[in-house]
Image (cartoon, rainbow over all chains, first blue to last red; front, side):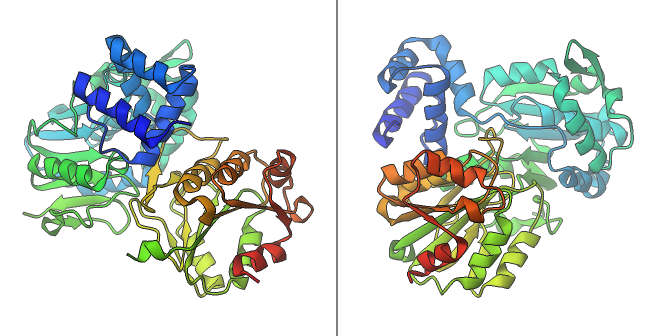
Length: 270
Length: 189
């Protein structure tokens, strides 16, 4: 097992050499990730991981991918999507043009779910979805819109629980154990690199989703990211967080109102 | 700071067949004073806040589901939320993680026990209950490695003996106790 000092060394290397700042990520979680990298990529010692990372630029993408958690699913927490559909989309529908940001989109399951939701509300044609992540590898996967067929049973169940009205399989074609989502959905999504730790606001949105990303940030970094969302959100726009994340204790909380007792969706009131 | 007053932490891991044991233990607990309890229970994902209510009904001690970044305080029983791994930081705060399932489980008992072991060292007592999974054994080993104490439910009293038996077979148990003995142990009787 590696020590806290070794982790600090490694994260400082990554920051100094490549500009990725993981130093304000929660410690226990990042330690688990780095231990996992040591095991999965079969490094005999910490020193060898550090050497590889310092001297092989191509390994960086792998490291960033492995250190970030990329576990996601379509229509995850179906009730959340139901509330989006029932309480948020009717307001978004009043805009001539809808801009949505998925911050930390990972491999894209959520943004494709959103595109389906918009399609069924007849809003997709006037929507643009920005899906960003720090990790080039996952963005490339997301851009392909290709997912494993074995997950579709569960995604289809989630879709129905969220209030989906069609056959889920209408949205993709199946080939060789994989499914590819319809081009119509993908055309409305822009995939781009963006780092919540160091990059700035790049547009104004009516809805921002950032679910299960802030749990990996310390308090300082959480406040930074929430500030960034606040800057990027129009007045009366919506901010959606993960099931166990909250705006409570954030400096901007007073300007926001939670729209549902259970789901973590806030509206920016001023 | 109130966190510094924590003298003992009991982390309890349970899988199938452990629910009734937990109810039994909760009903017998004395006030915790300078101790805190953390419960990691394998269960179906979802918003089952009902679990907290059921637990609360059994004990006068405050039972709460963990919020992320929440500081651990003495006198409380904390429950890991469904579908997240629960980690304990060295500053005695909780963090949550939705990474891959470990031993087919999220929350995983190993993940919580291992991080708690590093955070609390000798102050930590790991308790592993009934289950039909290998989760928990590695966590108990880590607890011992960092100077903590481990207790395993006697498999003969467990509805699913596999999980506690697995821990015993691997030499990860300091004590093997039936539920009554576990309650006494926590109460310091």
